[in-house]
Length: 527
Image (cartoon, rainbow, N blue to C red; front, side, top):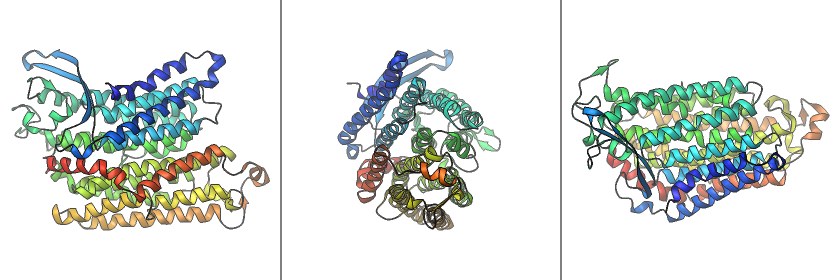
């Protein structure tokens, strides 16, 4: 039973159906796309309720594995390179697949009211869904890389064609930043393929489970722990770790590799902003957890201080920039940089609570950022303006919209009962614990707390300026006629997202039951 392959390639089938639709029925493309993502979501729920994450007792164990030899290549004296079509699910990938299918479903729902989105738009959305789900399921590094690169293509066109006034600039910047990291990732992939052997067949391999066991590294190869090769003052393994980290840090994004994100968000249409913030940023952190740290566990202790510093800088830099923004969408983009910094802090803590908190934060931020960007899109669709200073007293015109904005803001700043509180709490607990167990500097979690205070400042200040007080609109009476309250479709989307963040905030075990076993085995592998 190839349920994982079905989950990955189902949207491609629908993309083909969409593209071959006669022009007279082109308006039905959105319904085919909605059917595709709905089926994906239903399959994911089946996997979620049947995953026995607690029974995965060893690092590298997966459920529903699909394995097939894909490429056999004779390398001459070096032996044979075997690349596999290998898929599987564990406690790390399951919550992220669930997040992906929820966000893609929301993105299609958010697209339904726009008649400018044609067959090509929905076909590209389907291609995005396939590539992102494929990334989270791939267990061969080469297969992972194929899906990882495939993500670039649809998003480049979705931003570049349907984005704002500076869409070409934003699309090219996004593409070049990500491609920059991918090129160097490819170099490490090549070196790994020549350095690691399958312990059973003796073939060179890119199976992530085998790559994560140093004992499979060929003696005398560049990446062997006893290799004395030095590049740029670093050992080969440290350099490979750094290169892979940079590639995935661009996706997270970590300061100073973040500058593509605000531009991409500001110019992207609302559904694509939802995908970028809700899913794309999570791929970077997933790469650290699945690939970088497990393959180079010996390098991690030597880099922990520097990575922790990057996490703290991202938290504070993103928060201070959000506080200074006058564009509501740019404010939320910078807040994403700040909140994703907590993910890196939790990972680098190398503690059970920190890693669990980081994965939980990935899911939480995906849902909340989707909700925030959708709310910005609702306002922008009405008056094509999102400058904070151009609005005041919106609560009198849009009471239901104001209530949803307040809920999203309070949830995002970490109000107890919502998901962000759990994610940030456990990453901070992990960082404090790491001070005593791994000598992580105590100032790192202490300074990170100020990021939470700053998030309360910029969210509450924005809420006060835009929604309360006397009604003042830069567009006058003309704007007032367009600023009607949320529709049934918009209300349904917001209720779904707010229900998810509330459910996992009140019952964190919905996620922790998946991640706890993974975090335990992951740490036992690293430490």
